[in-house]
Amino acid sequence: MRNLICDLSHEIIKPYVTKNDIMIDATMGNGFDTLFLASISKHVYAFDIQDQALNETKKLLDQSNVDNVTLILDSHENMFDYIKTFKGVFFNLGYLPKGDKSVTTKTDITLKTLNQILPRLEVNGFILYVIYPGHDEGFKESKALFDHIKTLDPQIYKTVRIDLPFQDHNPPYILWIHKQKSDQLM
Ligand SMILES: C[S@@+](CC[C@H](N)C(=O)[O-])C[C@H]1O[C@@H](n2cnc3c(N)ncnc32)[C@H](O)[C@@H]1O
Image (cartoon, rainbow, N blue to C red; front, side, top):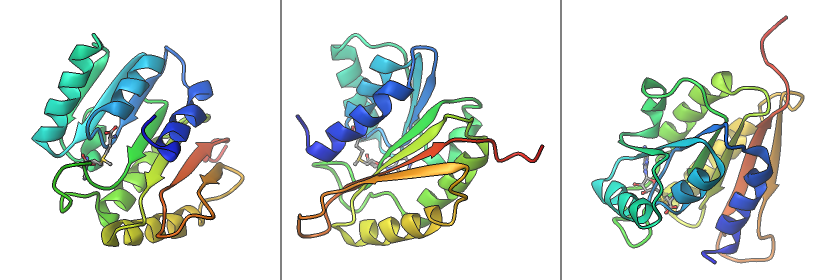
């Protein structure tokens, strides 16, 4: 077990992904989420901006004989240069565990990517965020994401929050946005 919130993030999406689905891992890190997504979907496109993340993920996938993944060294804001259709996008925000803490996901880029994903999301598609408000940039990112997501039409986007209400020091939490209806005008 990694930690409760990361484990729960996997359990939540499991029933919603099939072996016909394409998934995007927006922040591959050490590859644990990529490996999980590969086990439940047809193919995963995984992004990170650090060579270290690609190397670690490649090692993990090779050890597990997993070959339905494309690793891409690029920022998630460019994901649609590579992919057109997908079922869901998974973000495990923040910095690489045991890596350079200054290389962390950034509020403005995270919001920019969210705004690119939303209109491309199919009905029953989703975006899942694991959010870490316990460090400075993560706190800013958490607030900005929450403030933006709460403006979405709740008839179209159902948002679920899972958190640790009795833990101190701004613990991690999950925001899961599930698209229930088309936002195209008939
Ligand atoms: C918490 S880690 C991800 C953990 C990972 N999913 C795992 O299973 O180990 C966050 C990752 O986001 C990456 N990152 C930061 N900004 C990024 C960006 N703009 N695009 C893609 N990845 C980014 C960092 O390099 C770091 O590896």
